[in-house]
Length: 126
Image 1 (cartoon, rainbow, N blue to C red):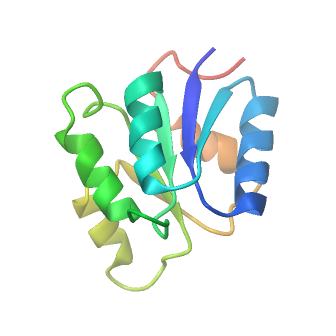
Image 2: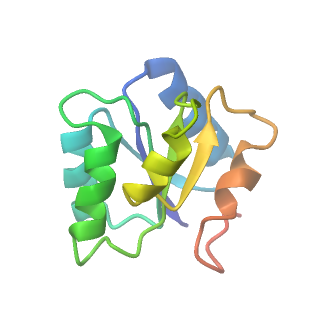
């Protein structure tokens, strides 16, 4: 089973994301702020990281940069899941090291298919 790390500080978003992923056969590991997210990523070595940008303690831009600078995590796809949708936000997110970008609110009907595009080949859920 593929493990996905969700770094998200909003309880409702965390619940929905976890529910959708677990129902599709993924193991979900959770972190509630940027600093915790980095520690969990280092420990768990997930197949994919879903990253909110507006986080307490360390924002998503910094988290993405730290992941890219970490030899053991630099190849893990990082997908920003964020409400930042202004002109320039997507570019800034990608420049920070994210592999992809999904806008909030997420669409529960297409979310899993959207994130599966970023998983390494052969890592889909069930």
